[in-house]
Amino acid sequence: MAIRHPRLQDLTGLLNRLYPPALAESWDNVGLQVGDPQQEISRILIALDPSRAVIEQARHHLCQLVLTHHPLIFRPVKKITPQDATGHILFTAIQSGIAIFSAHTNLDSSANGLNDWLAARLGLEQTRPLQPPSSGSLLKLVVYVPASHQQQVADALFAAGAGTIGGYDRCSFYTAGTGTFRPGMAASPYVGTPGQDEQVDEIRLETVLPRHLQQRVLDRLFKSHPYEDVAFDLFALENQPTQHGLGRIGLLPRPLELEAFATQIKQQLGCTTLRQVQGHTKTLRKAAVCSGSGASVLHEAARQGADVLVTGDLKYHEALTAQELGLSVIDAGHFATEQIVTTGLQQVLQQSLAGTDWHIDILTAQQVQDPFTYI
Image: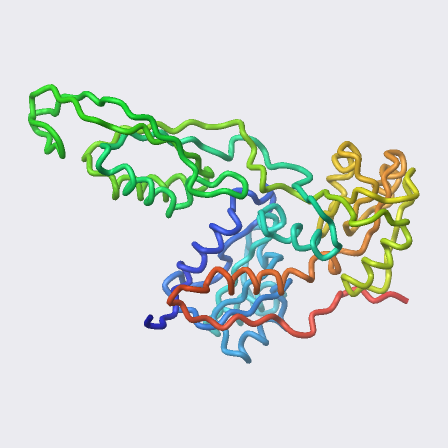
């Protein structure tokens, strides 16, 4: 197999399939922040933040792409100057030919994303998303295919990302029937004669797809289908993708006191200081996690019976709310709950690239530290 370097647009496509932008919060800014989609990428640096130090590391290691969790640009930029903090990073990245790509709240909510890694790091079992994404993000595709091309079209749809339900892929349903039509006099039909009624053995093929892949799936459908005019339907579904959602909730391997669980969190996340809120339950059995600032899931964690929520950036009034709910909270800090993103992304990308002819070196940023010090 010949080795080649992918273009930036190839990698952004891969990352968007792994961590769909449609899962990002409305206030967020995810995806490509800086870069030429046609640029070849041979080396990537993964970091939590697109800081000056990280960009300098990328320059030193001759990386063409910096992949971060936190975006460089959150709001519209009114000016770019080297004297401005964001402007300096943009200037340096552009002059050095370094692209910047962010996977933020979409990575938080995606299957095999940051909250799954956090839950696994803390030993949670039988985990599921804590707060599902809003409904309407799934579509059902129904298309009518001549029986001779059933598998060809199905394979094309699956390759484009259709047919995934939970932990299963290539999901579909077939129904055999008879298609009727009469080609117009100007038509060039695959089957039949212009002006004559026709009947063809056809298959009704049904599958599902995430809304953000709609155009990609339809493009593959039209390319693989033999008819010049394809008969298909798209329906918006109220179903919620079961594998995606903000936070995770699961069971501890064995019941623990709050202090014992806090000690375990320090060891697993490498932090020396925690803040905690004592809830009604002394012994913890069910735990929820939400990386970064997770106060928005306090009520949902309590509603689903969590004894404790592990998150960061808890404010005073949010701590009072947790007490009123009877929910214990361990605030490990924003940094501690998210710094595992570098190794997590590195492993996912290495697995995704295995077996391809793409050759990329994937590095992680060094000496990443919490900006806070505790005295």
